[in-house]
Length: 158
Image (cartoon, rainbow, N blue to C red; front, side, top):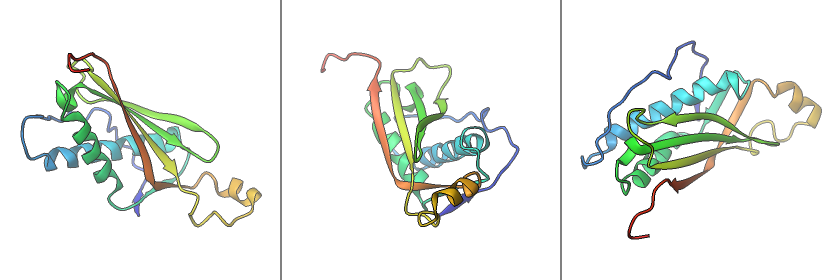
């Protein structure tokens, strides 16, 4: 698991370039996973109200590869993507952030990424009143996630 410590750095101004027509997407995958990590860092204190977020090893890299695979068939590639990052906790589902991959390009599709909280963590055996006491310290993310796509255009093939 990866631990994301608290940092007071503004990651929302990061700008990265992506060319969907280049065959090697490993560089873009690592840039995208870094962007997802930055969004989780920003949401950690504002939306999740916790000190740390624990992620399974390689989860963000796997998610970024899936996002790039979904963007390959789009007219503008990843540049036309608007990503909605959601978190499904024990009791509710909330939006953590909205990422416009390229603000200068019109969105051609939307991706909805829902990360889920794991219930098989160290605190699953604690009584309910103790869970409320330790609630604000650590959030454990499951290896399972949902990624769905919504096209914002119609093609002749459809």
